[in-house]
Length: 298
Image (cartoon, rainbow, N blue to C red; front, side, top):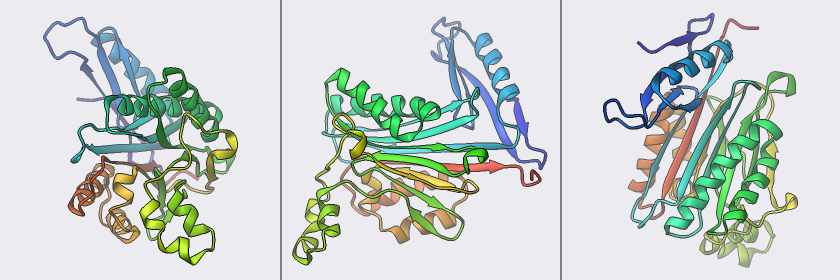
């Protein structure tokens, strides 16, 4: 039976499991410890992984956790250049999530997206979302293999106002759902969106044809290029997605999915499948995050 931690109100906050990195019996290839909150660590063997899991359960928040789930589909492309990442830092009691969309349909684009997403979530829990995009940019620039767009979000603690710290470049998006209303937190950095915002009706009329042209990327963005917003108050359900989800699906479809489904995996799976059903021709990735907190905690 997997070790678990429940809140005082009886809600599941943390549940860990350990699995061998290599399923071959008696393999020395290592083991993975992970939790439903997104925390994970690798270890040289399963006994060490179990010890790490116990430490996580002892140090993780007893009143608030976030349960993430992601689904990513290659679609008709030759490669899946989307990537997502989750990082939970028990020492700071912080969590961060990211979705990246590599530019191009090749292995290098997929690698750049994975590098950016993983670098971003690790930086976000330490120094915030804007610095996370910059940190991802340094990593991608050092590899010089390809470029990517990205959205990253970090949960803010109650003493900092609660809510989320969100930053992005390109056209990956973030939404917040409060149970009744879907709020888009990001604004696409695309030529199409620029045409819509410029106030020229003639350009606005042709904007849809330019939504695939991104104006900012991870490897080239400066501080002034990065989109940034912060929400405050109690943590709401959060959704991050690549444009393979957001472009085929209208906001009403996303809101209906958030309203209909409660579990984070059901939300992510439904959105990706819906994008494919609506003839989405790109990689499609959705990362849904449910906050879980003790209702009895003041």
